[in-house]
Image (cartoon, rainbow, N blue to C red; front, side, top):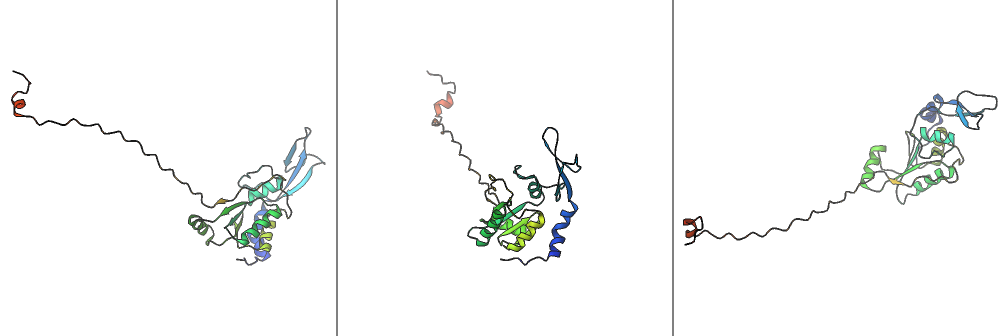
Length: 212
């Protein structure tokens, strides 16, 4: 499945306003003790100026704080998630594009009826691959379309990940919790009951058990 290319005007309307509004100038500065400080005001002529899109915006915290500063901010504002299925060639192509470009992403697999139901509620269909960049959904693999959106979100065109960085392993879209059956409690053995002898006439006439 391929997605029709979005025109540049529509693409900018959907994604870039939030980037432009949140854009700020961040100064990377080193204090007298050698510590690195990021601030919106320069402390001296030696301050290194870096423009970061949406530096003050809020978003989910990155799971890996070892990411470079600018990339970590982009991940927080526009997290990338790839939805895949088994034996899906377009899914493999999409995963390869993200890996070659060095983009941190999480992968969700669609393998059970529960996954399919959740996928339908999320995107309106069960078609894969599906790529989400922040709140933007890209249905079907398209090299040019995915590249456009990833670039507009602020992701670098070449890998900027640390050498030891690894994306998390794929996980099911719906985590199934299997409950363990409770162990049967052992039942106590029945206590044998003494047979009840029918009362004879003599015992009825001599309830005290007096023997003559």
